[in-house]
Image (cartoon, rainbow, N blue to C red; front, side):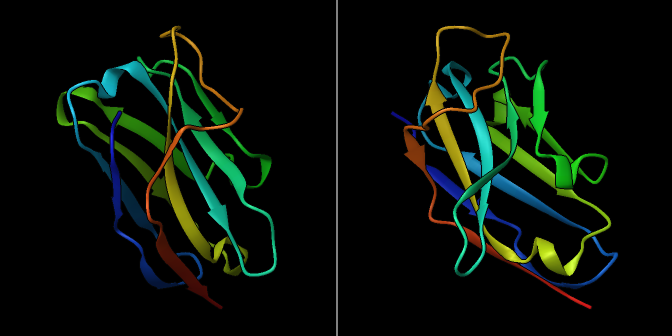
Length: 125
């Protein structure tokens, strides 16, 4: 299975932008639907965006719609999360996750198999 390493987190002011990257090891990245989760202190882990194996289907949690964009480059074994118009409530540790799926056409919102170590995003007001 793949192994995942996130990067791109940091500290920004409200209204700013960050792009998170998640690099996957192995040669089967295109067999995995991908997701970005976040977890703030004292809160449950939350799926914020997901993308199908092909990249043609995406999901966004309501609070990030219109501000976040998930994308992937299968040739580079990488999935991205572009985050614009950041708000203090976006502050969390962001995790990349992978789920091996049969279908190429649909994103996945269930239980993921593989997780990265997380990257911290802090948005100040």
